[in-house]
Length: 334
Image (cartoon, rainbow, N blue to C red; front, side, top):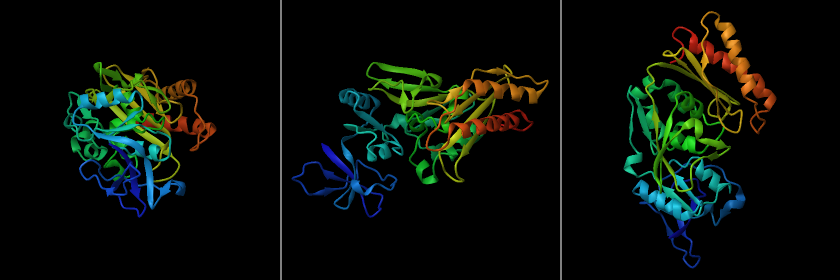
């Protein structure tokens, strides 16, 4: 069934629908198929008869991963996967994306589970950020990742947003991406051809682009045993409160091989992961200066609507110094 999805103009948060058939003037609320979503201001040109038009597409609530892959394959590159939808629905509303079919995976049981333990963890694709943030063991096991997730949007948004969605959106400014990079996270992916794993370091191919095939769904993220790691996350943004990053940095110190890894976001078309750098404990100030030199030679900051390249060039070494001081100090990092 083709449906035109709209939001009430009066500001209510119920997702309503008109049948796409213009002969039908009957309004229908899909209580069983659509759930409330966050509302954002929309240009008046997109108001129609007192409603905000979200777009024309087929909506499919799947019950299995295999069903979702078949739907995406049939769409031949014109399908989109809906988990939290906090980025996707905004992009559809603004005309940046126009899928023929929206594949809702929120009710697939296999995607709603997570486990966190010292031997390694797995987070399903439909697990909301707040479910993880409010789980105490997650904080103690992956505190830098928890800190990064806390910096994503507002509390209300995190009730919908997912960790997998933050990665699949492939924004260069994604706050979770640098931490997942230094943790060596691995993505579990399902498609028509079967299942595969992708190291997150190989996942991003450009701004809002990934290596996923058109019929593939990321089903979860695997995190390794963090017991030998001390990690930290820092972020510079334009305003206090909730904002996208101008620069974000994650760092990990490995006790097993005495190396430091850094990943930098919001400075290039994709997050940048630096190779491991051997820690020189004889002169930490010299070591931090050496790392800053490596960062400067490896990252060429960009200009965009949030900041100029010159500003990022000035902020980046300051953040790198701060995060390394915190990471390498007694009781620092996490």
